[in-house]
Image 1 (cartoon, rainbow, N blue to C red):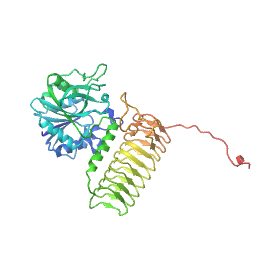
Image 2 (cartoon, rainbow, N blue to C red):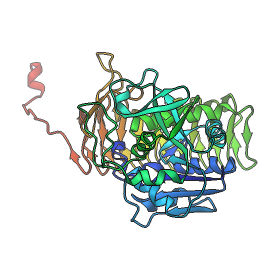
Image 3 (tube, one colour):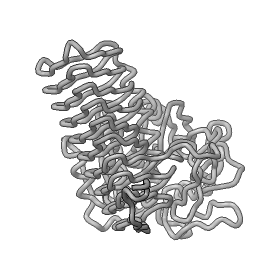
Image 4 (cartoon, rainbow, N blue to C red):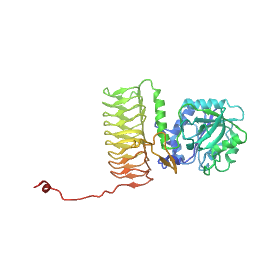
Length: 460
């Protein structure tokens, strides 16, 4: 199979606060845009023809894959939104034979995609294939799911209460016979249980349901490794750590570029990659495996825990701590006893102590002693509101999620699980207890009590 279609047209509104300023597929995992990672792996697996279908924030998608040659980037504003519309737009380009269809917001391992491609090559005439993931302990209400029996999908159910065994992974092998079903749908994905309420949208899953109803055979390929459908911020946070762990676990020995400098006093436990022009300074402690990008500096007693990646040109200094499984983006500054775990996007700044776990948006600036609470007194996880849907994430429920271009004053406290939209300013000493909409100035007003005080109070 030598052709693939990546559907990258959606708005990704559930990814707020990052969807306000980003195409979801261009967000980085392990300091690499999701869609760039997809394209790189597809090309490594020998897929020769790759079509990327764009609509929302197409400029960002183009930027994310600018380093690759031979891509067919399609997005003139006419493909519309919805997975059915996006795939239909791709099929109008004259594609023939079988093709791999991927959702542009999925994160997976090379070996798992290779296995899915091999299963696709074994299909018989008339068959199609869907990648599926076991539900295990996950809530089916959060996903478009499938009833799988005998190695085939028997039924598709969207956000059900029960009656399913797997969820769809956003990866399919199909051919042009799906095209008529993309348009011959009821207008909503009506493969729901009674009482559920699907929105007006043509979906690829709806087309597959019509394909099954017409007697088609949809085989199920169960994916064994970590595979993430990055719909919400906590999915992104979890995927980032999982990919860092997988990729860096492959390191068997340190790789130091000839132009990089590593101090003799640095304490390094485990393999590290230090790229061109990077510096590991005196009294730095690194618990490998870790990767330090081009021109990055880790100096003055800073500490990196394992499975961490430091982006190009970042500066980590002055006894700060980067937690395990973290990505520090290009050009970030982290210093003076600050502690950070999670994802720090490009150019973000955290200085003068403080503690943060979660995702910090691009060019955001945390004032001195900004801290986030991530352990509740009831030892429970925070319930999040996602476009009106209440959800308790299995990972990252109590992390903080600050969007791009946010500023906090000194001594700001972020309570467990809060989200702050882009272009916000949080004033000094403010305790943030709830989600803050985009473009908000939030500060506290204190009541001052003024009285006379002096030597007379002490008997003089």
